[in-house]
Amino acid sequence: MKAVESKAEVYLMALQSLSKAEREAVISRLLEDPEVREDILDLITIYQRQGEASRPFREYLAEIRK
Image (cartoon, rainbow, N blue to C red; front, side, top):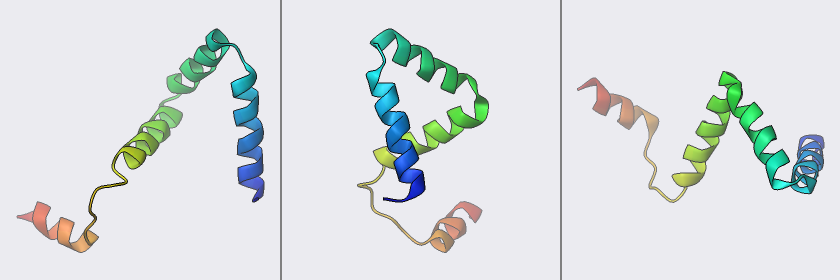
């Protein structure tokens, strides 16, 4: 396990050990930070769209330039 993954596991375990109210408070505080909020929303989008077909980036650029 990489150091980043190890540290993430520690934080996840700590978060899971909190009561529901405490978890909600922590998550609310995270969402108050615009940069963290954007990162979280980006990750949610990635997870939601994992099953979608992909295409080359250049093809996408050509399409939006039309």
